[in-house]
Figure 1 (cartoon, rainbow, N blue to C red):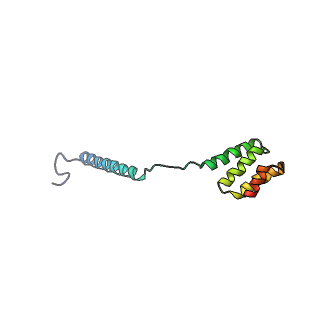
Figure 2: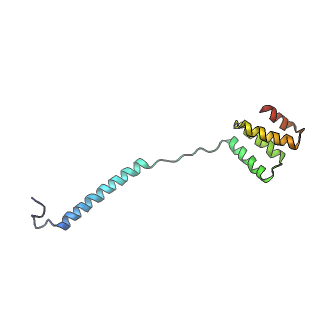
Figure 3: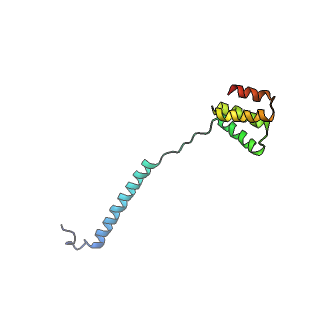
Length: 110
C-alpha cells in the first residue's frame, strides 16, 4: 500500500510516526552517550610531607622570621626531595641565628 492512498493515512499520521521514531532514536543515543562519557573523577590527595610543607609555608607567610617554621619548612622540603628549597630555608634560618644546630644540621643534610 502506498502512503497517502489509504484514507487513514495522512500527513499528520506520517508526521507523528516520524516524531516518535526521532524521539526513540534520540533517547537511545542520549543513553548511549551518557554511559560512554561518564567517568568518575579521582584526584590524589597531597602526601603528608607536602601537607607539612604547606603548613610551614602558611606559618612563614604570617611570620617570615619564625625559626621553628623555617626549620619545619626545610625538613619538609627535604622530605619531598626539593633540595633547592630546603637549602634556602636552612640558609635563612642560619642567617637569622648562625649557631642554630638544627639549621646547621639541615644545611649539612642538603
